[in-house]
Image (tube, rainbow, N blue to C red; front, top):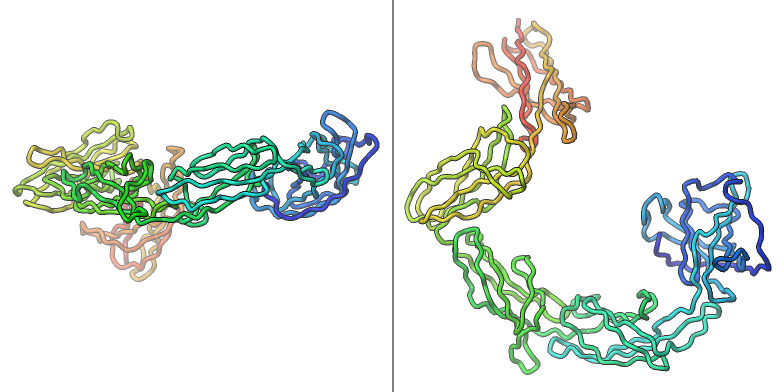
Amino acid sequence: MRKRTLAVLCTATALAGALGAPTAAQAAEQFPKGFHAWTDETRVFLDFGTVKPKGLKVHLRKAGTATRVATVTEFQYLPDEDPCSPSCQDDPGDWGIGSAPLRLADLAKYSVDVEYAGTAGERILHKNKATIDYHLIPRVTAFEVIGDPDIENMAVTVKGDAVTVDPRDDSRKPLPNSRLIVETSAAKTPLTTDAAGHVEAPYTFTGTEEKGDSYETIRMILRPDGSDNDHGMTNEVQIDQPWAKVTLDTTKVTGPDGTTAPVSGRASFRGHDGTDKPVPAGIPMTMSGSPFKTGEGGRFTVQVPIDGKRSQSIGIVDSPWLNGAGASVASDPTASAGFRNAPSVSLGFNRTVGISGEFRRYDVPAATTLTVEAQFSSDGGKTWSTRKTVTTAVPAGESRSRVSATGIAYPGPGIWRLRYAGTAAIPSGSAAPSGPVRGYNTAIPSFNATPEPVKKGAPITITGKLVAEQYDSPDLRPVSFVQVDVFFRENGSSTWKAMGVASTDNTGTFTRTFPADKDGYWMARYSRDSSTYFPSLSRQDFVDVK
């Protein structure tokens, strides 16, 4: 629990001397897992979870001394705006309690001792649970930003006043010759107050500030140096946004599919005099989601991907200083062939792998046959080895087709890709890799079709169990809540017919009932998750139908 918002009550009682108290070891502790205590500049906060202890008192004494100078006995519940922070163990409840601002005699550091009743009514005392630094509190009491900034004129004047607040009586005095910080999302700039605690200074924005409450404002904070924002003041500065424009030196890129080409241009805005002017260096831009920034004179150069004939966008990111603006770049792939999208990889029987992907071709000069390699990498794509080669016929011009390679021996965990190596006439394009592939063995070690024999029309009950390797162990364990396919082959036939599916329970066991019709063999197959598990077959069980 960190952020507290409600007002609190307190009674502080001055004490003439130290009071004796029993230790925690002498009593029955209500909170064996502990509780949390903390302070701000004038208050004490406690979090016991969901129960406030009986007889709660907070004693204050100057750090390093034994004499109590005040005791707090009245608290008010406070809502927890961030439950389980820093952890649910440290902050098990959804509320805490706090004191009112303390009125102490001296500015000093004070140790916080917490006392409450034990389970049998004994007093329990926890010493040094927190420290309160009771000092003069610097605060900004006035903050003004003068000017009408825009991207053409980013200069304003900052004015403010700062004081010190004495927590003993809430009296205030100017904060003379002290450093304040004016802060935006882009910069922190120091300013110095005069003898009267006043500051007035020019300030120039960078042009890279993030938006405040809206796209047309910038949030500025003036605070004492070394203090948080609660000791300062915030100002939302209105920005006058001009129209912006992106002008490209070329509106089309050419090259093999899957490559990139540079595109240059200029980002500008409409000035006060009605003419286009370059945006400052460092203005955020984006190329189809990839960020970059302008250089001097609003110029930029960015690599644009050639992704088939899909156009790409280059634009200015919306900011307080500029409205978003953009331009499109067309793609014109030259003669090339490749696999722009990641392939699909499946696991087959006998620990084999199949890979399939969309083969895209552009400007092929004449119908031909191209060679595609199925490649594997065990080191995240640093090195590749070819595991199978296939050929595919392609027509002239632009075309797409599915290319597959199957029956590849499983080499272990890794990633896969389909790659066209390229020729002088048809250069290679992309060869996008798959995600990580790791295969786990499965088995159906028990399978039975009963009864045997059975009368025609009577029910046949299929029962089996599915097990598989797990990510943390090669041991075969039950696979729960998946579907297994059940097949039947009539005696004398070589064709298997799908009869239906059965679902495993939490022990991996599956059961399904079918009406008896003909003599034949029953079998189960698991092949539902071919991206993770190798498929498996049960034994074949013959049933004689009378």
